[in-house]
Image (cartoon, rainbow, N blue to C red; front, side, top):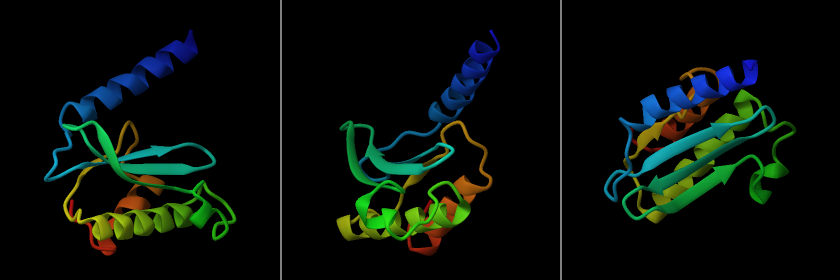
Length: 121
C-alpha cells in the first residue's frame, strides 16, 4: 500500500513537469533520470520522437573515469559530456526536464555543468 502511494506521488510530480516541458526541433528536451548508483541524460526531439544525444555514467567512455556513478562529481562529468556532444551535433538551446526530481543535488550539478560547457536553458 505504501509503495503504491509513493509511486502515485512520483507519477503526479512527473506529469506536472512534463505538461509544461516539450521538446521541439529548435529546442529539444534535456531529460534526466537518476538512480542510486547512476545518472542518465538524453536530449530528445518530442515532435519526431527521436533521441538526439545521450550520456550516462554507464557509458564506456565515462565508466573508467568515475569511481562512483551516483555522486555530484559524476553528475558534473555527465553534464559536461552531454553538452559537448550536443554542441558537436549543433544543439545549443534545450529545455530542461528534471523529471520528478527536485532541482537540487545531482540534478542541479548536472544542469550547472551543462550550462558551463555551453548549453543554454
